Length: 310
Length: 322
Image (cartoon, rainbow over all chains, first blue to last red):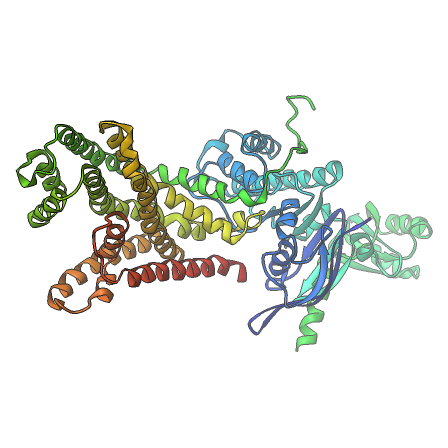
């Protein structure tokens, strides 16, 4: 997998505030989740990648171009969906997309046709002809997403693409992201605070905190537990099952009600588990290899920074 | 891919040049401004004076042809034409007629055409320019700040300079439509009414002077208006500041200049944008009009343009630094 973005010792300060500090980061093709608490430096990092702000120190490459050079070329290949509302006042949805396409160097004769194609893909109907100011939150999200992909970019930077969407629309948005990455080989950087979204679509995760990269790895590796263990979901009293397992010398602990984590290999524990469940009068609903939750990884990374600062 | 497939389609066309992206900003801003019914009315109204002045040109050429022009104030058609163009200054009309009496027909034509174009720019078009900019300019940048459209613009291959050029081109397009084009039309009308195309030999410099005058007025005015739009997110504040600048400048000029007879009042005169632009237009169009200390006025215009554009650039860069 080739690296799309490589950053070395990148720093950026606004006056005395250090927004990015010695950032070393490699982002590969595929879908990367960019996480971090508010003020972690995510927006600054995006602006650096887009060539909108100059760094104080550091080098790197973005889509094969040296960092800070050939900004126009880089931006032609990047589709950016900002978190905040951004539209040209007084235009309809389709006109906004058309302008976005033209600004991205698509000829005006093509821009309108392309705009309609993209709005169809985004599931927008006749509301595309309405002024943007009258749009609902969901429609605005669709519009921003459409503006980001209208010029068929190689890399998509999506800032909170699912915030404010209902569950159905959220799933549809995540599906679109999956389709673009899987079928059209688009690389995506997904900035969000909704961790299930990251777990659902991302291959890799980068966690920024206080301007530094705390975690950067594949989701699979991050979620792997240090010792093999299994998560068991049960119907009935999980405490009875836990007691039965403890009596048989198998370590287990409760995660949430009706769910316990059992240490050991699934193959070896299989018979013991079923016997213990029968003895405890519980039904086993599911058995799966235990994983670290992304939420826990995120909180650990952020706490580590807070500890270092205090 | 089937035509009914509503899935994603890659785009493999040829991209346009990056350097022409400012035209997209200009096109969309022109289209947005044109949605104002007041602006449409005003643009239509701006061409009405041309009709009246076209008729004066017709009278003048008729007079020249019949060999009556240049016979002093006794020539009624010419007197009427000049009086119509300088209604409040009969002494100026008399002076112009005296100046014309001593000239050849070609010189007289040049002088007359210059005077009526100067008059058109100074009066009707000058006032319309203030009103038109007052409608178009205030929301041009301020509204982009408010709706955060700069994220849409600058995340694409568009530089801040191109953005400013695009916004400036929007204003210039409208301003040149009400200053340059009517004067050029008048020039063409004058040539068509004249006895032969040979009049071009004596008047060839007028289109260049008209272009120079229009640009000298439009560029500083557009820069100033863009600056006002860039310093606020509320376009009504920018509108207020724009009109206040013209009105208070004019009032300051009217109240100060009568008491400074005999002294050098250039700096005070530069306080009034109306008089400043009027003097520069006079200097460009009327070869015989002696404008005292034109250099100072040109420096003031240059300063207005440079400072305004510097402020606009700084303000447009600001959202990227937060």
